[in-house]
Image 1 (cartoon, rainbow, N blue to C red):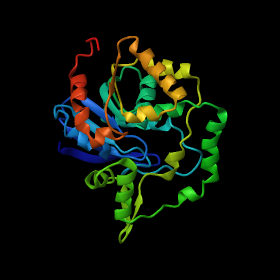
Image 2 (image 1 turned 30 degrees about the vertical axis):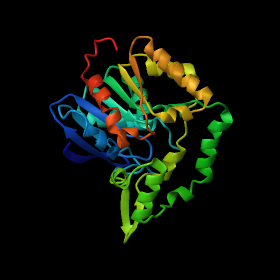
Image 3 (image 1 turned 135 degrees about the horizontal axis):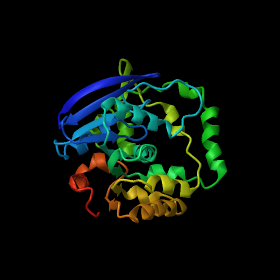
Image 4 (image 1 turned 180 degrees about the vertical axis):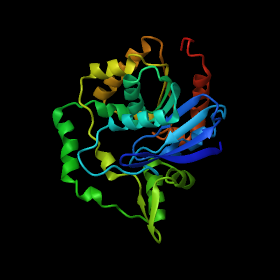
Length: 297
């Protein structure tokens, strides 16, 4: 699918990069990536989706071609909800579909809780690894995020430099990608510093974003109340989640399924299956997007 345009919007701390595909007159679809990623994560999937929709993605601050935030207090997982709000207002959308991956799914769920009725359908791509971070089994685990952040505060200001080859090889190994896939996933994240030396545009602080710490009943209420229809897609990573946390996630799913609002699709592949093997889930996504929202799931 050909790119329609790329542009930036100005925010108090810097620029946010946007990119769009498809039919600008079609139904709007917002694409929100996860941690240490960028809008490029949706490119393979878009090749399998209808051109009749208007797809818009953006790079979250500290990712891709968007600017980082100033150094200061520890970052929270809720801040990106404010960025989504600004992007949606910029686009002038009153209603839209939402496709998110990993942390981008969690942020969409929080956005819907704050602005109910705007999101008409959710496609959540492997949300469980992100959602399980909301479940702190003891307070010391919660404290650890803050301790690591401030203990490493000064070192995180220093950019690590890589050769292009070493960056590609690292992504291939860590995310089980081919060379071509690794080059694509890095296409918006590698910044050339000097000859054959690059830095990654994603900010090292995002690895230590503090989780929220609320009762599970709180999450069940805000995620399932006023929820639109949801296509919840899980990869084999789901089985790696601890049993206690998996039980809580399954409680979320059961709560959302009470009103026939959720389809749970299991797909063979890793956390990036939407990128590595988009053909394994594209048909189900198309059917879901085309489905009459009044129909029973």
